[in-house]
Image (cartoon, rainbow, N blue to C red):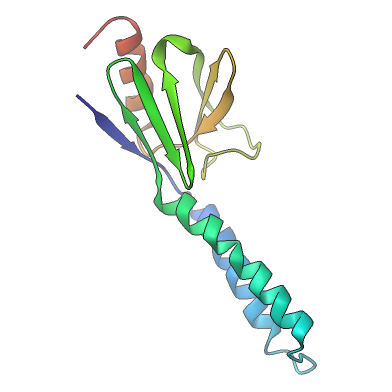
Length: 136
């Protein structure tokens, strides 16, 4: 049986995305602004990053199965075996990571070290600990 935990997007994260998208538009209204080929190219380049921002806001969840979980974050997908987890703890670390909130879970395995942020961090941790102890 699978249980899904949805990712958490903090208000400040929405603010960053909004600011990133509105600031270049605001510059267009400056009296000295002129559309040139360079400016058009720059705007296209800037707004291409929305192809990264939008998926990480929408496709951000964890599916927990009996012996592993699958973490989906934007275009990234990773399978983590529960038996490989060496550290599972709450964190407020501000390092850049796959967490759109500072209310995070730090997960370490033998070969990975990453952070996630879920709407129900406590429920996720309890379920993983229960399953690691052999619970169904």
